[in-house]
Image 1 (cartoon, rainbow, N blue to C red):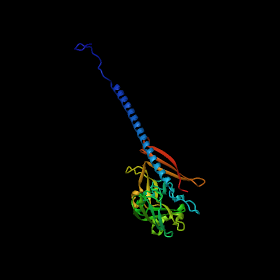
Image 2: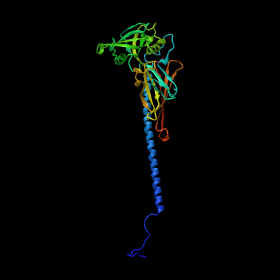
Image 3: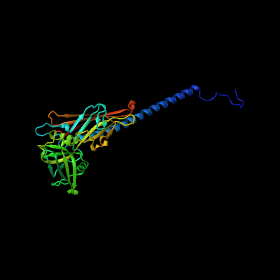
Image 4: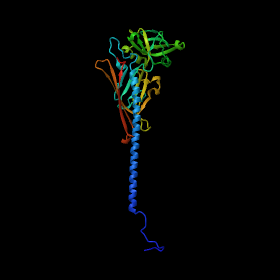
Length: 338
């Protein structure tokens, strides 16, 4: 049969409805698979990125913890008198599995985590004393520290000067041959000379009746009181510090993540250093959700080791594919607790 134009008549070209639906279904399936693969790889990449961030956070956390623990007890605050037992808790101890709302000064630690307390002359030198005067009964006196000792040893005085200018910082006084030590608040500072001839005259007063800071410092001295019968000469001095390491809980409402932080106090007190709230919240690493610290003494009683375990977590808790968790551990030998 021919058309009016003389051409043969053929069936109409094009796809049927069924063919169209099949093609559409295949397109949707391929697109869904591609989207699924894309989402999976996106989540995998995010998890890997979170994991690398957690590794770095834990390295930072453990580096800071190890550095501080190695300074625990520096200056001899845990060293006993000849007739006494060592007091390692003066230098380092752990508040285990704290309850909800556990205070660290004006802030709180996350529930179920540990709080590590470390004391020692950690961020400054132990200075050799050139001259001193001391009333063994009242604990009042002064020490002179020179920028260069008589033997030609250079002593940077910046840390001691900063402590003296602020007042109330803890001055650790070490007796001759380390026989005894005492802790007293700095009350005044006199500076003279320049360069290598610079001299700092630091005044202190160890009378515990002067207030809670002085009373707490006396408790950190040899025997738990000012060692009136043994502290007759001062050999070295340093600025005693106290740091507390804790987990600050996250806040979902503000988007704040949990973090390992540290706080500085006047040693043996609950008073923030310099009485500033900023002293209580010095962040170290984000996404650290748990800190577990154990201080172990060897059977012979001569060595102490701190075992540190931290747990880091990132990602949305509701989405398992986005949640990454890591545990890191390290051990630190404590050298100054005996």
